[in-house]
Image (cartoon, rainbow, N blue to C red; front, side, top):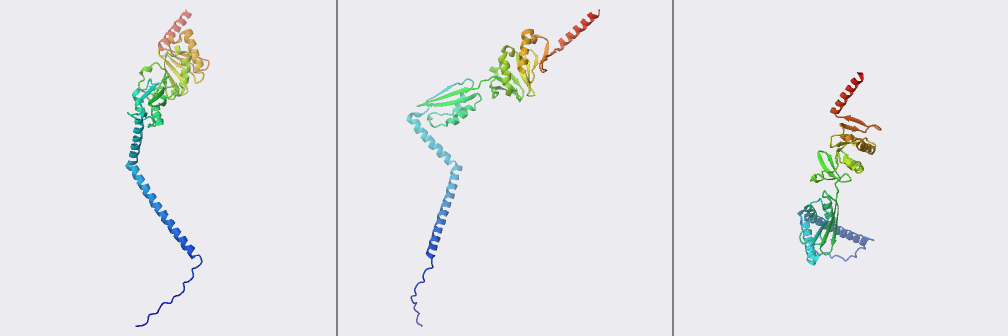
Length: 294
């Protein structure tokens, strides 16, 4: 055996300058990375869980259940809808209004979406504007302003009721409005104001008009019930309409054997007679000429 060498105590080497600060910085960086990692993992888990909750429908279920619970509590407190007052409704079916309101028994006064309810009402054909007012504690006031039908518009193979702006109201249940002006042709509804002007000027004369046809989206042909056609000019249609009134008032032109009264040439009125009348006049002129030669 040999004697073991004893380790002599040697003094520790002095630390290098800044070594402690370096180690402290490393530790802080490691801690920061760890915290960031944990935060990232937590965020990922939260996102995945949230997507699952949303896709599975649990969130919607919880929301509805919470809303219903609050709604029931409010209703039990005496703020449930007890009466619905509807005013201004004339052409709109009352069932359509009720469906648009989408209320249920025991619903509270504060649980429904007022804007969505108004939007559903105003999407109904006849409803132009709707105003809904809560009258506490239990009354819901629904005020309806409806469109006013002023004419028919025939286009695209259908006949529509239109309002004063030329906007379509509906194409259903139009029989009761049979006496309104009848416009025909693409774009005719956009020039409704011209027809309404003529109607307001001489309503008795316009009552004899069966249909107003828009020609080339430039001018009007007026078809009268007795079969006579009035061709109005592109410009100056009001003046031509006034001349027609004077002809009818003074000469009863609409009672004569005439097919067409043409005002398209400025300063001139051209008449086209019925074939029978044209033949009668031809024969009359022929007889008159023979008589002159005798």
